[in-house]
Length: 109
Image 1 (cartoon, rainbow, N blue to C red):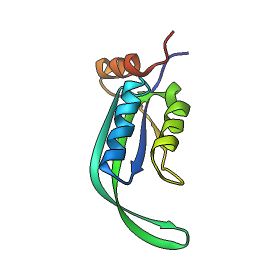
Image 2 (cartoon, rainbow, N blue to C red):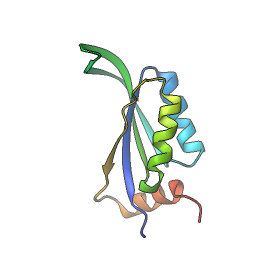
Image 3 (cartoon, rainbow, N blue to C red):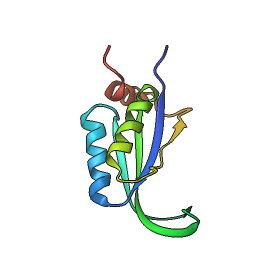
Image 4 (cartoon, one colour):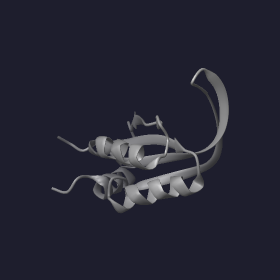
């Protein structure tokens, strides 16, 4: 099976938590790169109320095979009861960049 790249996204409530997640994912070779976009305002319904919170958005680039492990680490590190975790298929891009992404985040053979 040919490795496939994916983009994962999550949010967290502080810059420190965002940086911890980003560093952990890259250090553990679960992700090739994590962009921390900060801050963003998120408006959502939670426990019957509409709330707006300041959050830090993480854009995580990794091999699709790392999805479960990335999701597990986000649940462990985010501090949220229900952390956002979504995956987006990468359908194109620079082959050199995508090869690097896969080499940096694929499971060892």
